[in-house]
Length: 227
Image 1 (cartoon, rainbow, N blue to C red):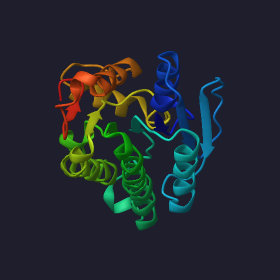
Image 2 (cartoon, rainbow, N blue to C red):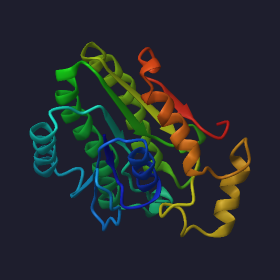
Image 3 (cartoon, one colour):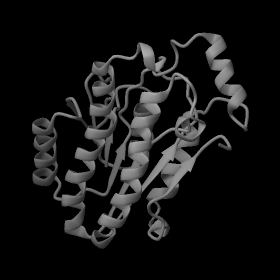
Image 4 (cartoon, rainbow, N blue to C red):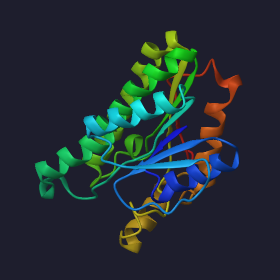
């Protein structure tokens, strides 16, 4: 299993969860990662760096000869009014959230195809359907992920690979912990089920997508929180 963005937040929680389930987990991040386990391997890289990504996948192919699951979790955000958002910020967000995700999908399916089996899960967000002010660029990048999920599901199905996405509500991770309290409360007020998400909410959906019995489920985006 590959999980991107395992240095903190959702990615770190997912990595520990699947290590406990007996998976060999390959993680990556740009920042420091303190996960220590016998079956965990970490790569320090920018997921939009095609050269380094290709090197990671060459290692996986050489060392393991197979890949069962990819979880595209890594992402960055910018909470700002569009008038105050620079083009450099837009480029940075799309390079990580979209280009990096696409690279990992493309390279993963090349290995998954060998065994005619694979599960790809992309992390989206409820901010796509919520369409909140100040979230234009971040939501647009995740909307791109949703579209890619739906199309790649069709392209990859002949290889025995399903592609789905989970759209969490905001979770108290580094992406939102620096938001003003009134902004967080405004977010909660707009979520039908009335609370921020927790890591276990995400794991529940990912577990479902990974199950062998879910081989007839592909191209789906599951939003959390009643959105």
